[in-house]
Amino acid sequence: MPKLKTKSSAKKRFKVTGTGKITAYPANKSHNLRRRSSKMKRQTRENMVLKDCDAKIVRPFLPYL
Image 1 (cartoon, rainbow, N blue to C red):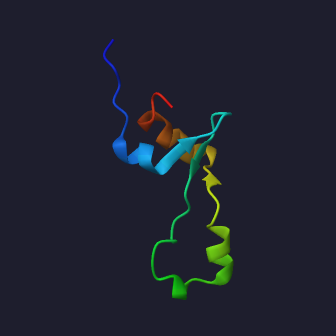
Image 2: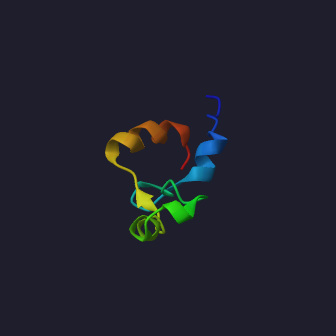
């Protein structure tokens, strides 16, 4: 069997937890922060666990994680 390739963009953006869940960094935190509310900036500090429907899309991109 040949090895499967991991998507380079996915391995930079997603991490897999010890229990197998996929975490991601929330969007809208890179620029134009003066427009964003304090609540939004505070809530996007931590990594988020992806929902099952989104994790199902990301999982094939990370075959060995």
